Length: 118
Image (cartoon, rainbow, N blue to C red; front, side, top):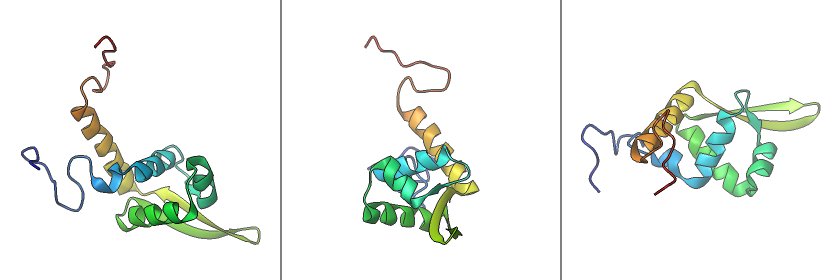
């Protein structure tokens, strides 16, 4: 598949619509985490996204390995809790992903409403 000139395709998943972000489940996870700067607990993400433990765990692991998500384990009272939040670089990469998507989809450019008459 040809990539636009100057694209970073093939370099650590940072090309147009990075596969690390673009997968359905990972995109949903990142949207949740972008909306919660303080992070979300594993159980909250699982419930909000209606995912199994295994599916959520695998995708969070990939996002953490890619440097987009930070994992913090703590105790709330006497119960262990795993908290996930976006990293600074993860927020920047996600923002870049959204801008790439806007550039690819006609009518999604900032300040332009999609033309529903077509």
